[in-house]
Length: 386
Image (cartoon, rainbow, N blue to C red; front, top):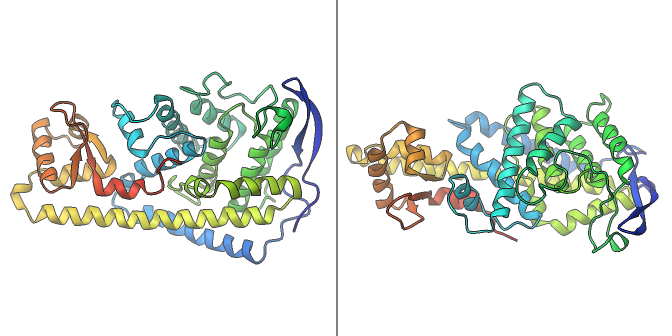
């Protein structure tokens, strides 16, 4: 059902020009959503896929085997949508204090995303409610270092922004004037906690568009908007762990994504957006489950190869297990993770190198960095820079 009125326009000044800024009507949509056909099928498929994804965490011997990498994959993908060129391996090298192969600002931006997501999950598990305060905390961490650090981290904007174009006058979209932002975000917070609000997946879909339309920060709105989808699902108990990397779907379909956001604003076509959003949740959830199975298969196959070596394997199996949690690693960090001595780690890595399970990336004799290659190749799928 298309709606002809999803908000109002207000004349405001920006950059020395007079422009029409869009002020969205509070959620939920009026008239109510009508989900049938493609939208209903997509919603049902997404709910089933989320259940399968959440179920992965219950069958893993150690959830953190995948969680470390999945969180970082989402961070890389979400930041790539904003134009960064950092890869998953670049981020892991940066976290080891090694030099990544991309501009430092790019990888700092991705690292901030990881910290912001982890902070949000920790706050929710500590009983802190989904709220504008939490959103501002997440934003403050996201812009704490690198690009955007001078754009009021953790504060709703006090000046007009715009999306697309070189100036407000030729922008593709102009969000609400700054004096409307606080009230609009307050309405959005109330929607999250309204007992009459739709089920959580629909709530997340509606919240995302409304947040992107309000665009309450000077920078980082897209990343916060994507990050919060995962936090919404975790807060509702739909996901026990933040294993959803929805940004992969949005990265691959950026043009359609922006078209649908504009369609909601112009025509109130929420149903088409919801069908797209749910299609993405289903596709990414199923992809994450399939990746988990492949990663576990690789780990199992390598473990069997090491077991056949008997005593010659030494501590290689212990080191291999540690690499499942951090597939780019150094000898000192592996020693810290396993409790083994540095010489023992070095001998174990020699075994893994001989069998081409891992590779050394630096070519140096000291401060060497090791990659669990087949494992990392699976994780890297879809993270190639745009």
